[in-house]
Length: 142
Image (cartoon, rainbow, N blue to C red; front, side, top):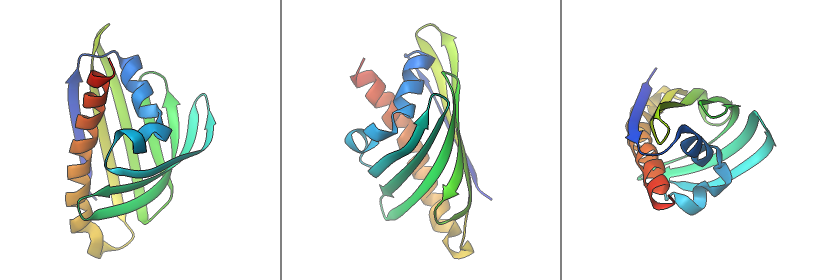
């Protein structure tokens, strides 16, 4: 099934980028592609979060359990939604104290094979947009 990966080099620390991605509640205020976000449970190293996303004609939602390995990685595993499988991962690698590489990887399979082409195209565009938007927000809020 489709696996999508997008990376960006940023002039921000891994800690800064990790905190931006971890702040799920702020997504609807910051990003046009996020229509709704809710952190349903949260501890220092785990989140249960629901996202309602819209990107072009693509509209979908899902709930993921996110394992937080601050400030290096966030692993996402599907708990509910219109997918047979949805796994994701944010990786944050330090280049130096004030620069890093941010990588988003999504691996998914919709419940309906008929949706596969549309979701693949939609998720490719969304992954590009998500990485770009996190970089833009980090630059703007620096």
